[in-house]
Amino acid sequence: MTASTPPAAHLAQLNVATLRHPLDDPRIAPFVELLDPVNAAADDAPGFVWRLVEDGAADATGLRPAGEDVIVNLTVWETQEALWDFAYRSGHLEVMRRRREWFERHVEAHLVLWWVPAGHLPTVDEALERLADLRAHGPSPRAFTFASAYSAAEAAQDLQVIPPAQDDQVVPQARDEQPATTTRPTPAGDAAVV
Image (cartoon, rainbow, N blue to C red; front, side, top):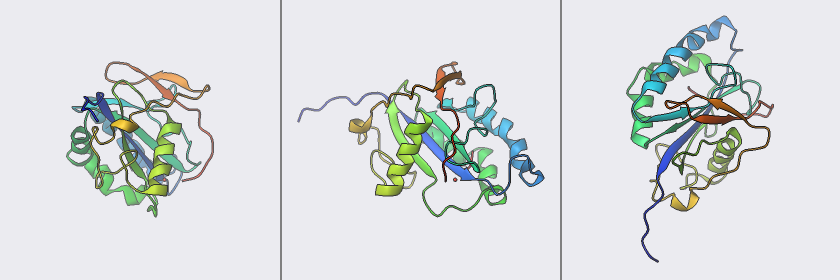
């Protein structure tokens, strides 16, 4: 086997969270108040590439592809370190510390990471498929967690682009205003910290 340079890759991240109460419930208000500042911090964080937003909205909390009471957070980062630094070394950490106030405890994986070719923006369906893969088969180069991470080189054979569904919409929301695909929400069932 000949050595080859792996394609340039970025790290995609999906997490899902089951709300304890509807987003308009006063008990969820502190979380809702943190959405804009935390999303703005992510948008300005070193290594941030893109995040999913609902068409005409500032975030993705209105999208419910994993269930009516489940919110999703889907982002792309230049490196695993950039995502780690944002998640655990920024104001985002305070949101994570308070997550039990707003979200149900998970009994199965609620966060999945995977490598995508640089420039590819994952669809919600692609992200949910990676989460299902992690839940069904455990960590692998296709779908992993921070605790069971794989490098882009280790995942090179899995750096595939899944074509978007026909009903996907294009929504700009990235540092360089790259188009992002979002899927219209459809009820399903499952649970994240943004």
